[in-house]
Amino acid sequence: QKEVEQNSGPLSVPEGAIASLNCTYSDRGSQSFFWYRQYSGKSPELIMSIYSNGDKEDGRFTAQLNKASQYVSLLIRDSQPSDSATYLCAVISRGNQFYFGTGTSLTVIP
Amino acid sequence: GAGVSQSPSNKVTEKGKDVELRCDPISGHTALYWYRQSLGQGLEFLIYFQGNSAPDKSGLPSDRFSAERTGGSVSTLTIQRTQQEDSAVYLCASSFQGTKGDTQYFGPGTRLTVL
Image (cartoon, rainbow over the protein chains, first blue to last red):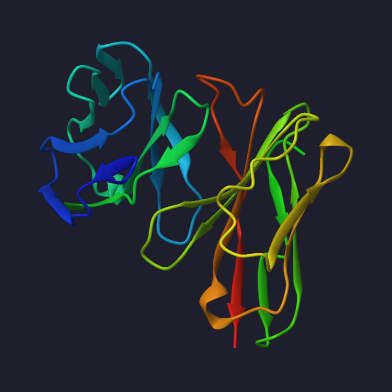
């Protein structure tokens, strides 16, 4: 079982819709969770971090964490074509090790 | 500089040659990570340096791979006797402390092509 799992996609949504990206992790002791965005040919850049159960909102982005279900998600409201990228979920395990998922490819269709 | 820098940005080499990839972390960051990303794949962890502690080498795929971090700053990833399957983008990241909740900042990567 992989430490972090994501649906590879591709996920396509129309402009203005909500994009929902999901991630599960295996280490129940994990405490820190991150979403990175990676444009084609570019390096990952941090979008959101979340450490507590519940929702965390930042502009059009909302991260949701459910530690009981070992599940973290990212919602993108009012999706824009510029949001088209691969979204990587990352988790810091109880051993302070960073694990990345393989990423979900998102395409926002104008 | 303001961010993580890596050099070279692109490296083309012949199978069997050795290569060295360099990473300059953000000033003051004590933690440094190396990852490999093959085309269309996620990030594969290679090695992690934290301050003066022994590095976590658990991700290195073979003994042809090694890395050093001199003076707690610049790091060099060395791949000996390169193989075609080593072709990938090698990403370096640094973080302030490398502890829980610590954000990693990525460099632009080195694209390695082994012919």
